Length: 347
Ligand code: MRU
Image 1 (cartoon, rainbow, N blue to C red):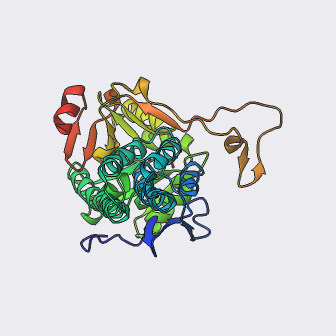
Image 2: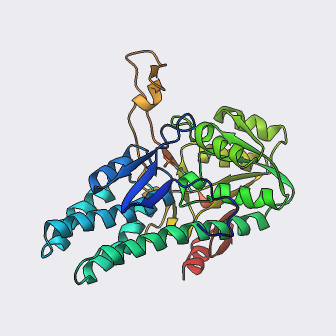
């Protein structure tokens, strides 16, 4: 964590005593507890099961997971570890399909594995720590760039793109933290974000911890909030931004963007370049994760829907570039994104 970062109290991913510790986000805000991980399969399952979530946090976790996999495989066979670890990388890659930061982290670590002579532990661990540290530093840059676009305003955010969803500080919440510190943001509205309630459980928790004024709303209230003139910006994170500027993010982001357009409000997507996938040309080609129907039927162990009906649970959607006013990265801002502008950013 950088010493210049004033908001360093929330650390979802920690490396301690040669193992990985993940803050169990499924239990927040009621219980704040870390689980310890010392094998790759449990780490991949922790990603799938939402112990850790948010695209950049998933990427950082994957990098540490590969360190642990390499340690296990090298102990098993100093001769064959490079071939044995391939099944671990495949297993990890399938933990969640939409957040590109998972594939990005694997792509960063793989060449080091290929080139390694001898015990890979130190090299891979140093790289994982660098990925983690860079993510935090990039978020602070994103926060400052994003805040530079704001006038005096109130904002709506969706899901959780905060410290919990990243190495620390947050992307959308990084912009909100920087904007609030600069005296530009008056109030934050947080969508509760069904079915996992990341807004109610995580975003509201983070903002309260930092004394940033937050009001929780149901997603259905967003249009009426806008109609009442209560916000100027929608600020969200992303799981994958593709070459033409289309943005995958938590289901409901598209609704918020369409509503913002209707009400003449602005939409900002804050994300590190590790979330940008220039190999995918349009949002139509982004794999959208669908999760269990039970996540829709059941809230905190209570079945709320009638038995014997169907449910559909896509957990991300794609907001077309035409609805996005600005993509804010650590490398700079892309206003009204197009293929050409995204290519220039990623040159
Ligand atoms: O299902 P989740 O909680 O992993 O979804 C997270 C989001 O959609 C975030 O907005 C996105 O990953 C950006 S996090 C900085």
